[in-house]
Image (tube, rainbow, N blue to C red; front, side, top):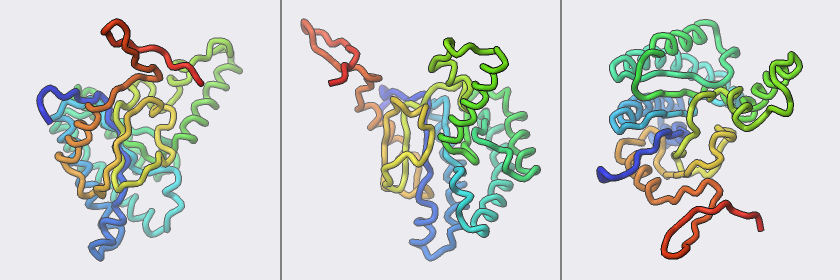
Length: 252
């Protein structure tokens, strides 16, 4: 990657492959999750150095509760430990931490840990690190529409005033730019109910690398590929009189 490469303002990550990483090594799945947390820590520091402004990771989905009670319990314990580690890393790297998702299902101590992370890092001015926990995009949109509908009933919002921007302001990601680049590890090609509204025009990069093996070189490779993309946001490039211009795409 050279110094002229454009750095995406917002990078979203689907951290896939922890279980397969552990299985390949004859280890329990929980060891894969633990190693994956270490990779998250390193990636936060790398992204901050690169000048990425927002880094959003898919930490725990609404569907992950369907896993065995043993694995879910281990993930909750790991989350408790990781929040303490993350607070230290955030302070060292001037990182602001934000959680998205419905935190109400977690135990009280985890909710307090999340609140503390956000509270004690809110004045930091560097990278904004967003963790999606108990998150699902359909759930996020449903909760947003429910709150918007309630405001309509109360007369705070008129139905004819509802726009994309208004609905966006009710999402968990309100006030954040949409991701420029989505990276998914482990070679799977699907969105897995992640940021479905926000990824409308996001460039997608898939790598076969399992998440615990993800490193700075992999992130830079994704940024290089991002720079090769031509972002049109629904427009098409036309050449006219020796110049290029973007024109809105017309459905065929």
